[in-house]
Image (tube, rainbow, N blue to C red; front, side, top):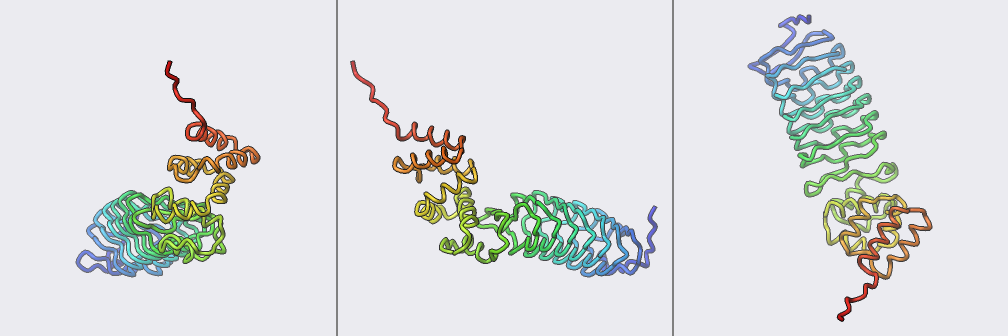
Length: 298
């Protein structure tokens, strides 16, 4: 059983101003509603902390540079977590943000180099800039649909991420492709935020982002115009990557495949052994372009 010295806690009203002890395991006193700014900052002895259900807010820098912190559970009473609250907690490996939390601050987990698992729950609305920057062991993350604001370069330097949530536009989330190491974030943001499709970047990345916008119906007229202008090479890119979801959406739209170009795409699918795509295109050709004799009147 953990026993705590009340004198280790500096509490004013219901705000924990500062922890002055050096225990490895800490139980925050029940009745505390706010873990205040810098309350545990640079507390290198801290390994485990238990937060009571009375706490509703974790303020800025609350656990900043707690280098040995490995175990912390955030109760569902907490509604907000401030800027840099867990900055450089390099021993933290996993954390769950409960559905009660509406906002997580900027640089909240920046430089948590061993953080490999993060669970974000529906109800979260705001993720601020650089929130997970340089979390090098983080490989994947799912952003809840409730999120409306994703801060700038929230995942900068997460070099092992399989897919990186990039930004939100009109409530729509984009995942940037994996291989973007040589492409500045501002160029990708220029495409998505400023709708500037003339940006000169690797076509693999550019096509990926524009097709994502097409799927999400963002700037539908501008995106459609760009796809029409560059359709042959963009559609071959889709076939090469076997992206059946977007190919089906292209077919469903009826805006790009024509009687003049469909045979070329079918031939390309045959030559490159894209059999499933070949079947899709052949069926589409039969349904939309093949000659069908009129009913004869006897």
